Amino acid sequence: MRTREQPISYLVATAMRTPGLINLAAGLVDPLTLPVEECDAIAHRIFSDKSRGRVALQYDTTQGLSDLRREALRHIEQMEGIPASAMGLTPDSMLVTTGSQQALYLIGDCLVDPGDIVIAAAPSYFVYTGTLDSLGANILTVPMDENGMQVDAVERLLERLEREGRLPKVKFVYCTSYYQNPTGLTLSAERRPRLLEIVKRFSREHRILLLEDAAYRELRYDGPALRSIKSYDAENRYTVSSHTFSKPFAPGLKLGYTTGPDDLLHAMLQQKGNHDFGSANVTQHIALESFRDGSYQSHVEVLRKSYRVKRDAMLASLLRFMPQDAAIHWIQPGGGLYVWVTLPEKVDTSRTGPMFGACVRSGVLYVPGEYCFGRDERGNVPKNHLRLSFGQVAPDQIEPGIERLAAVVKELL
Image (cartoon, rainbow, N blue to C red):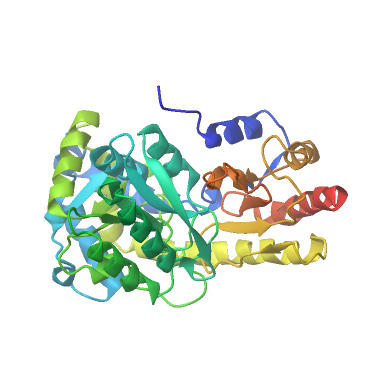
């Protein structure tokens, strides 16, 4: 069996068995901001109409509720500021999935055979790289800087693979273009069309796809609203873009929606039929109504305000409590749920290192940065990074959590 334990399973178990632990690891949403009243009103409207209620409680298509796909496409148009036709998209170019995680899995499952190559950033979203690893993918990485994934490094890697005769093995490039998990970095406006151009140029004998993970797109607190990479693909031929209701609305709906080339969407649809014959119809009707009555859009604004306060509290606490050391620094994200911290190389933040256990004993949990990297050519993984999340943690727990974390760092230094 290729499937290994996902690191998230260990982190969840650690949090569950440690009472009083301040969990700065969980990438979950703030429970106090969940749209309970909005969903209550929507559910009442659906089920007070018996005909509508029966429809909601029945099966729908595997592709997803047609009205929801139309509304989701209108939502994409509003975010992009251009019509769907300029991206080659119609409601039939969209697949509704059980969370965007299912879409990511289906894409990998449809495209990757054991030994195929996927290019990703280093660091990257460790849950998905774990999924790709379970599918037998060979994940090759390129570095990031303050402008996100280094697209020139993608170009150099593709050139090298072509020289080595391995270009046919490359199936897609995976990029979290907005407020990346784990770093919080965003791909700059200039790099977006450039990355698409590189992928198109190397699609000489076979098509290389560009998978854009836009899960955190709407959680923007500072900076401009950038067009997606998808918006530059007028043919809808080279890019796949995955979205979710989990981060900007409610994870309990377990819904995502993905746009992409027709042939890939067809393959994903057939495989999704093998999974579940379609995502939960009731939650699709709730999501549809949230678009129609404006509660989705208003809730996004609520989340932006709430998370901005929590992000600022975490950044202020790091500045207050972390030791003054030139080798200690962190990224100030313009959105998303995460702060990426780099410590001196002598501080081992790995799961088996001294810092992780000391932090758990001190009552605070983080995600070891090692999970987010693949091994380099010498088999090494950086072990001096950590990911912090301000998503789920209560506002009054952020400062004491960072104080506990910083105290351990001081002791190790």
